[in-house]
Image (cartoon, rainbow, N blue to C red; front, top):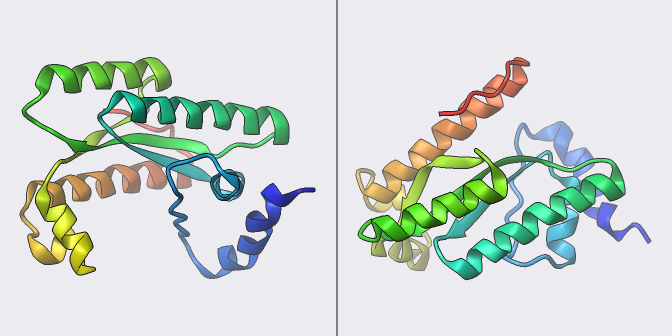
Length: 165
């Protein structure tokens, strides 16, 4: 009973030591992911641009509503991030964006992570995209994402209403 709160209680001490704690979860709604959602203040939902992945986004959004109804709290949706985007498929990409807007309103990040072999190479080498090529499209997209998140967090910290591009 209450297993959803174990991670939240464990993070109570860590919250006093760190400004930010990032919990990376598997792409499913198992116990770990639900516990992380209960413990989190905000959630970023990465998704590739496929129909199957969009079902996962829909499931996460429904889970956030269920958490609010069940526990009286839910993390704020920081945004949905499109990843592995093939820039050549403009019409398909716009259909995916529109579907996400239908699911989550304006909670789609402006930053989009392109499909690049450099990302897989960084992962296989155990390094970052910034170490391999700071000027790559993927590195620039991740920097744009960082700027968007930083702006959002700064606005919330000052009590200012969140701006959307």
